[in-house]
Image (cartoon, rainbow, N blue to C red; front, side, top):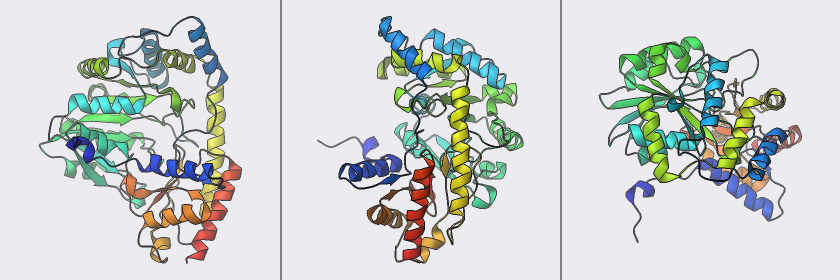
Length: 393
């Protein structure tokens, strides 16, 4: 049977592919160091586990509303008010099966065939695929390393056409970890308002910010921008809950209702037990979250300095998330390999070091390294990377 055109055009996730290959090598007994996974290496905090157990013991295992438990929506609304002074009614919030599902549902309800979405590059691997699945067209804006991989208002203005429906802002970013400042967001927001664009503000790494920098949401800059923004977030990265699959979106009531209607036919509802766990995540103190962030920041500083010792490698220092996105173009050009993808593949074969090629993120010259692993693993990874670079220089 021939498959539908919409799935035949999909590009498999490069992050999941490299993680799968690394796991297969480990299963064969190889000593693999994996810097490919985009998830915290910490277990979910115990108070969240306890809340899930309590929910099970109390029989809270039935269907919930398609758009999520009212109690969880209220907690999410309270979180917006507490963290960003944003007010959302419960009918402006939807709970989804992970932030990825929130993005998928959003594109499904806002895009018609041929509608365009501006996607700054480098980008998270699923953005263009989800847009294409909604019969939309991703329009890539190539950002510059010299500008910390940030899209400028001039670039956004140039990318807008009569078919442009939305623009994606991911801050902090996957894969670069860069963070847009308030002034930078204001300038982009002016362009969005001028052209009546919906801003898709992916804030899943909001809690993972280091140093003196602070997270700013496009939605908190003005009432106008709030009306033109759908915020995407979740507990996966902030609370080490990737497998629990709880995300959410907040924004225009009509859009949120359409997403809820879609979810009612697609997933019925997010897992009930995971929703009660998420309530605990957002109503408990953030000591565990802060502790994890401190560990990530220490790893960032350490790994970044180690990478700078590798000749011909350059790297923008990120402000958030848990990725480094170094440029290895000169290293690869001076090696016998024809592409960064081939170089990464051979690195895994020879050194059993798994990193992700930047091609999957729209950046052919870079690779993504996740520092969501121990300092010992990061030290060993750096040794293997340096040895491989020296061998083929």
